[in-house]
Image (cartoon, rainbow, N blue to C red):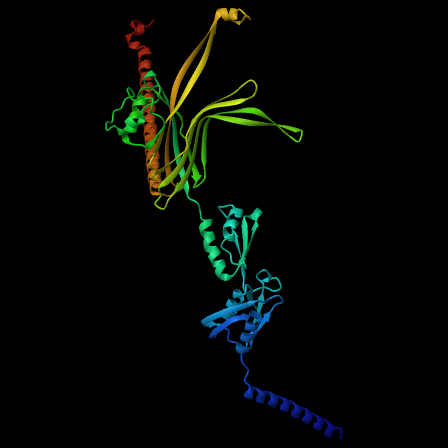
Length: 470
C-alpha cells in the first residue's frame, strides 16, 4: 500500500513539473523574449516634451532599462537621425542638463554632480599623472579648463601627482595636453665672458662700437672711436670685433673679470653676480611689535639671462646687464649708482652676442702723511695730503647660447674634444722630450764623472822613482 502511494505521488510531481515547463515554452512561442539592443540605429523627433516621458517612451519601445532619479525634470526637444539607442539616451540627458550613467545594464538619469557617488560609474574613468617638470598647481589650473561637466582633478602636492576623473573621451584629451604641458624642457648652455676695458682720456665716454662693427678693416685701434653719443651697444660678434678686442688685449687695456659657463632650463632665468653684497639693518614695526632683519645690497657686475627656443633652434634671450656701485652710510642707509638695461635679442644657436657701453666711474682716495705728525689731532692735516683719482672703465659682455643637443652644441663638443686630444698629445710629447733630456743629462753626468776620474788618476809609470828599488 505504501509503495502504491509513493508511486502515485512521484507520478503527480512529474506531471506537475512537466505541465509548468510546457506552459513556459508556450509563452515563449507566443511572445518571444526580446533583449535590448542599445547599438540599434533609430530616429527620434520630440518637441517640448518632458524628459521623464522621453525616457519612458525609449524604455518601452526599445526595451531598455532606464531609471530617472528624483529631481530630474524639464522639457526637451530632439531631432536625431541615424543615432544608436545609447547615444540618444545620452543626448537626451545632456539636453536636459543631466547625465546618463550605465550601471549593470541600466541607465540612471542623474544630475552631473551625482555621477559615481552611489555606484562605480561607467561614465567616467580615473587616471593619475606624475608631474615631472612643472608646478602641479599650475598644471591643475590648465587642465581644469579642458574637463567636461563630469570631470574633476585633484593634486597630491607632496608627490607631484594629479588624480583626474572624467569621461574616456576627455581623459584621452587631457592625457595629450599633459604630454605637451609637462614635456621635457630644453636646456641651454650659456657661455659668458665679462671683460673690463680701461678707458683713457681719448675715449672717456666709452668706445664707439658702432664704428667697430661698421668698419670693414680687420685692424682697429682705440683712438678716435669715442663719442659722447656712444651709449649701450648690442650686436652679434663679427671678425671685426674680435680684431678690435685683440688690439685692446695687446695694449693691456682689457681685463677678464669672469668667464662662467652654466646650463639653464628654457624659460628659466640665469643670474651671474661679480661684486659685493653689503648687509644693512631694516627695522619694521607692525601693531607696536618691532622686528629687525638684515638685507643685502648687491652691487658690481650683474648679468641676468632668460633664454627661449623656437622651432628652428633660434634662441630668444632676455638680457639684463647691470654695472653698479653700492655704499652704506654711517646711518645704515644704502645707496646705489647703477647703469643697467633690459633687452631681448634673437640669435642663432651658437652665435655670440656682444653687449657694450656699460660705463663705470671709479674714484679712489689716497692719503699721504708725515709719520707720527700726520696723526696728531687738529694739526695732523698740516702734515698730510689727500689725493683723489678718477678712472673710467667700460664693461663688455659676450654671451654665446648653445642649445643642448643642437648642431652648434655638437660642433662645440667636437672642437673641445679635439683641443683636449691635442693637449693630451702635447703633454705626452713634452713628457717624452723631458724623459729624453733627463736621460741625456744622466749620460752627460756619467761622462763628466769618468773624465773627472781620469784626470784625478796618477799614472805610476810617470813617477821617476817607480823603477828604483833598494
